[in-house]
Length: 142
Image (tube, one colour):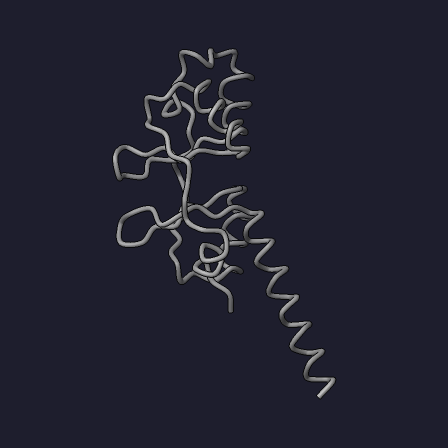
């Protein structure tokens, strides 16, 4: 069974971090520069939440707020189920689907170990299936 650790081993555990006082416009600039859809909001070493493009569109654009004067702390998502390195991919898929989330923070020893996305979970599932097919083909050919 594949785990969160498999995902982070494949993709790495580096995340783009911003402070809670960062303006939304600056966070969006960082996201555009890095070609990513979210930034992690940290207060020093403490994980506070994740600001996504979806947070921006729903909590700034649709509410007529200013991107210059709104901080990431004002709009970030902060309620996430807890996952760790040993959690199974199927469990993560269930959490993402049931909670209508796109990202999950990975917490180990009370600190952020990385972020996984729905895309990461799907990619890991595909890799697992490809490996299974390869093993079955090898078995049938031997």
